[in-house]
Length: 409
Image (cartoon, rainbow, N blue to C red; front, top):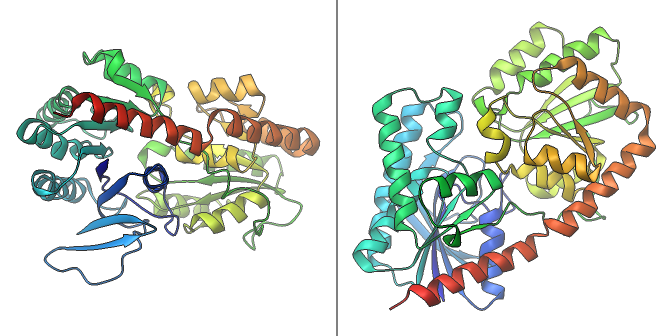
């Protein structure tokens, strides 16, 4: 089976963003299939291609994966209109490939939602099997965040969502809430499967080189957030607890924020204005260096803005990296991840928008390092039992194979 795989923000492990598409593509190869990734140039990604663009794109093979990269730069710090235009340009160029390339099945993953457009054309104009992966529910999430308020734009997004879901032969949801959201749009449950983000157990295994930023001392409790500094992440909650910890005189607890995003500069400015030297900002690093950083951390921070749509409708990469690294997780909102943390006793769950409970949990972690270590061991056990990337990749490949067998010819 030859798969054409559309993911605008694709990256190999040499980048500083999620590598789900890379790992799944590699697994396709091990199962005897072929795959072509179609992507753009993501600011925190690394496709592995380095030759100049010709005619707006470049092409090559990286780790056995055929890659077509469009010369469409994208960054999380771009404004709404610039990002929207980049999404549209990627979709339009992708249509051409969907209609001309030789392949057996088209797979597209959001975000952005416009990634589904080439699949719609492939399904209805070429009769190709189409599988659509939903990483976030649109327009539910941007509406809930207030990121998009224009009713015409929201209606257009809703129409595209419906068209993508109903055009796809089968769908993949990354969280229980996403699966429910797809079903609410009238898609048969038999056509939807859950394949959450997985844990790269090999990358985060023992043998990595631990390291800490110079601002964090050896005996400090280091709580780490690794991810985008954007509207959805609600990282003012981390600065709020930093202020509370300063008030309590707990300079031995350091909060490390690693990543980039539109809100990073304002967070840094606020930390400087308030003298929050217990907050340390770090630029993004690739997965190998991230594994070393997590090996030295004491706690992973799973932080999101307090928006009910997030509770069951997200599948954050960072959570799965934390548990793969054997880190206890502190979660500041309810939902399916919070439920797992409680069930497996692998961290702390605190109420949203409550810096006092947040600070209490960090002090509890600092006070009992033995229990913290035991929590970390239970995190790793959870990663191995339920979220081994290899096992989940097998489920994903099987889903594609069944789709191709059922809907070809």
